[in-house]
Amino acid sequence: MTIVLEERPAAATTCVDPRFTRSKQALESALIELMEEKGFDAITVNDLCVRAGLNRGTFYNHYHDKEALLVELENTLLADLACFETSLRGIEVRDLVRFRVAKRPIPSLVKLFDSLRDHGPFLHAALGPGGDPSFGPKLRDAGFNDLVMSVLNEHYRSDPTPFVSYYVSFYASAYLGVITRWVETGMKESSEDMARIAMRLLFIRPGESIEL
Image 1 (cartoon, one colour):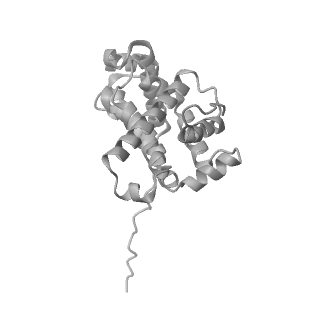
Image 2 (cartoon, one colour):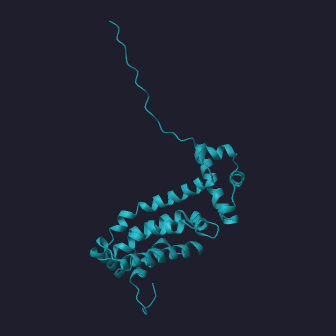
Image 3 (spheres, rainbow, N blue to C red):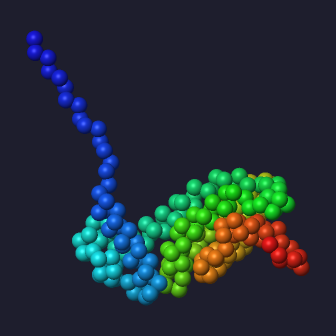
């Protein structure tokens, strides 16, 4: 009797060609540099290829057009921020007060600012005059709506009135301004200091000392 051994398919491996990674990184860096120099609207695919040292065929192996490259960079940043959504939503007023009294920043906020710092060059380009005007509102909604909602009473979180929605919009937009200011000035403050600033802004009252 002849025994036929069934051949099993080899296990699939996911090996990314380093050249693929390097070419994408080169295009990302080229986009950031050119956005700073001439603005996104003025950039052509040829500009990106020349700056990255790649041919057009390589570009189109990765992206359909320059907009696709920009969207990928934006979505990567927003996906990183989304990792903090659960922890930010879990922050309650008593947590903020406790850390405020102890003069310590909330760890999840520190990590949020660490993540923003990692994307510093892209943030500077995207939020600048040559960037994407639609990106700021996306960043606001992804990064700070949950933080502002966390300080509201559960009643308002579950059944918000029109005023509550304006309250959240007001503070979330203010935080976008804080981030924009931080990015524009070179991110000189540490993530810990920025987390303290974010907490302080939630509690400051008119006429009160503005010391951190």
